[in-house]
Length: 370
Image 1 (spheres, rainbow, N blue to C red):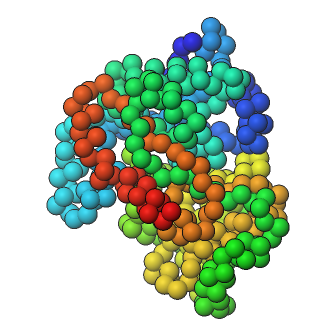
Image 2 (image 1 turned 90 degrees about the vertical axis):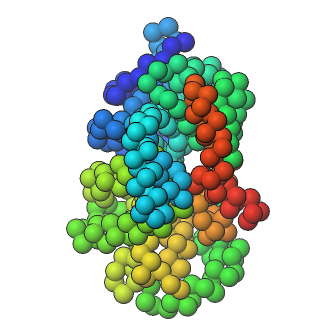
Image 3 (image 1 turned 45 degrees about the horizontal axis):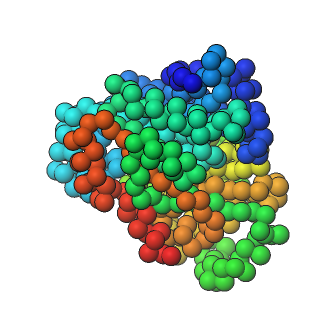
């Protein structure tokens, strides 16, 4: 088995994995946003497909991005705090000029599924082993990071990837509820809190394009959330600069749960509908309107109500990254943070620094909540 890096995926190649999508109850929409990211790649942030072949036949596919240089501030909130520290971290990042290969479901597959696809499920262990071996052998990449479910944990560790603590993926199992009132019955304090703002707060769901004014209000929500985020990714700046140039806000493929306060979008979450799943693509909350309005809670209810109406069975909310998600998104999929570097110095420094990283802090948030 061999692997090849590529920047295109043909319709015929997508067809190879139709059975995989059917098993996961997904549609071929899962490829759409990643294809747009590939088209927007820059010399600093490059999206690519990793294809696994058995002889001449395509049997596996992985979705990745490469980042060079790696901005240390993207993964460590302590380096984002304070102008002087942030500037120093930026200069050190540029001098180091490390190249990082990354794969995780948040940016790669809109939280819908793992970023790996297999023609035959029985071949998954061999294909994952081939992917990891390919990553180990890359001269360009100084480091490789994958956030993945623990299903392939033995393969990662056997191939030399070090596992670190990671928060779980959170999702709503819609099949548990006949309607929203059944969900609220499990969360009586939420029902009480939602009565506080009265008619001043309105939740709506929009399928399809937003108008220009709505997009600008959504942009302000995203900017505010980024400023106060507990976790960033190595491709964070690229995502912020490009998400509003994609079709996410101009296509019927996406569903927008909008929460308005005094007729202004104060919080929102956009989902991609793919088969019987909804995956969170982007969201944001304007803190100028957030006090006592329970914006995040209203987004969760709005997405659940839409999913129930449309026969969707699962709503994905990405990694657990706040207390509200811990309390209100009831299902979790355990994950691991897997790291590899051929450079022993990189391994030592990463091992020493990981306890200060955003992802590690989020894993503590989840464990303390339990």
